[in-house]
Length: 139
Ligand code: CMP
Image (tube, rainbow, N blue to C red; front, side, top):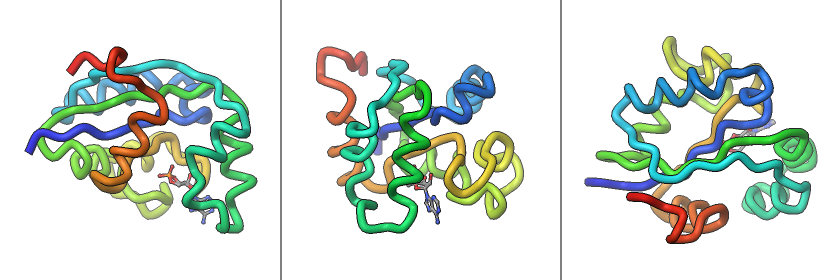
C-alpha cells in the first residue's frame, strides 16, 4: 500500500550535521521525499505538534528541545511508508534501537533521539497538514 508519513530530523541531528546521512538512509531504504523544509519551531508550535503528550512528565523538556534550533520536517512516501520509516528509525530510545538504525547511530538518548515518524495512518493524517499544505507536496 502506497502511504505517506511525516518525518522530522530533530534539532540535535541537524546541529550535529547528520541531515545528509539521514536523508541517504531513508532514500536508500526505499522512501521518496515529496515535501521538505527546515523550520525553527517556536515553543508553541512544538507544544501543538506534541499535544498528545501534554500530560507526560517529559512534555516541557521535549518541547523545549524541539524548539532549541532548526529541524527539518518532511513528507515521505512509499510502500508501507509508515512502518518502513519506523523500522529505519529504530526504537524511541537509542539504547534499545537495533544495529544499523538511525536512532542507534545518530540519537543521544530517549528524548534527543534524532528523528520522529508518524506512528499510524491517523497520526500521519494529522501530522502532515500540521506542517504542509497540498501545494507544498510533490507526490
Ligand atoms: P518521538 O517519536 O518524536 O515521539 C515523542 C517523543 O517524546 C519521542 O520521540 C522522544 O523524543 C520523546 N520521549 C518519549 N519518551 C520519553 C521519555 N521517557 N523521556 C523523555 N522524552 C521522551
